[in-house]
Length: 149
Image (cartoon, rainbow, N blue to C red; front, side, top):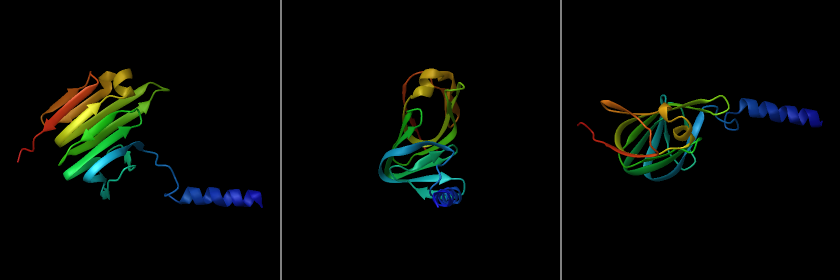
């Protein structure tokens, strides 16, 4: 009987996406004010504290709106009102020495405090902004990208 119950529980976990841990999770929304959304492929999700973030997500804050993001390596990113940030690439695997953090700031204000990737492999951290790419070597950065319109 115990074996059957364990088997049923394992089957339930395997077929139920709400119970499975997201494989691509690279961080989460740690804090927020106002409105914000996470665009994941063709799906738009309302952002809330605790929302899991995946590689490739686009985070968009409203006006008013602000979001604090913490990635799995303890990188901290803050977005101000009316901002857009794409989490283009992220790899944090210290067991094999693979690191990468690439974010694309579309518009708005952005603050960055480096985590372990910035400390262990600073040359793998890149911030793309309109008309430029910044290779981050320090631990803190504040950027304001003006809307060209």
